[in-house]
Length: 96
Image (cartoon, rainbow, N blue to C red):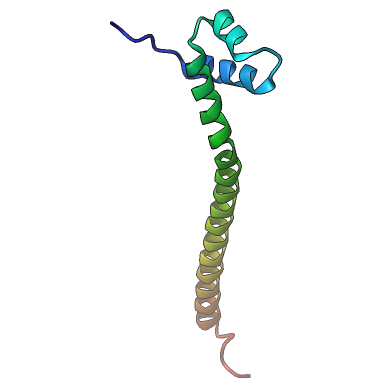
């Protein structure tokens, strides 16, 4: 017996319909030609993974901010070295 494979988009569509609750699981199973237990499993999986979507976005935003800050500090350091070098070459660092 070969198992039928469903796309991620199809699973999400069915799971979201189940979450909405406008139809019973049995009605959805009949409509989408999927076993009710499968719909229940997809619904559970979606509900378990939704919080991670938001925490992942926050973590990515924070990581991006940290990378930007590190890059800016690196640029500041490079500019300070260049400024010191230019002052030394121009004689501005010597006392008048």
